[in-house]
Image (cartoon, rainbow, N blue to C red; front, side, top):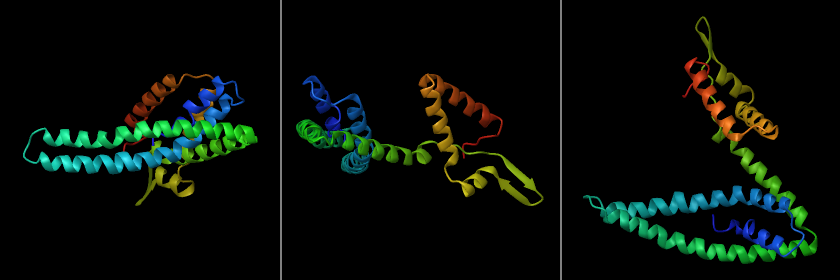
Length: 202
């Protein structure tokens, strides 16, 4: 839900401008903590529920051609989405500012920040097997027995290859490597290994 993370963006920045004790770690921690759960809720409500319903309604008006259905679908989506973002932004800003000030006054801001960081990292880490896809195409044949490297790895430690690749990228970024450079190298390596049959797109 994109309107709500002003709790982690606008409010802490205002808090810093007023010379309070909120630091950069608090801002980053709350952002990371909110990104996972709120993005899942927002995507489910907006992109997986609202958008399909609106375009289904619009499609009924364009069954015989014409752009009326598209216009109706876009109008319905924005009639809900724009007020949601506007009022959500105002609510998130005011509530987030109050929350940060009260937490800092009680001395619990560091604890909340650490909890938010831990929650965010767990949620983002759980997405690694779904977002990082590596499939080995190597197979060993012994008579009629065919052993797939990918199935063997998945049977022993599911998701270990995406995890190792992600940890490698984190290590290289911390060593000062450019993310753009790593993306290009990964792309070239994937194409080369696929052409050699080591990896497969299946």
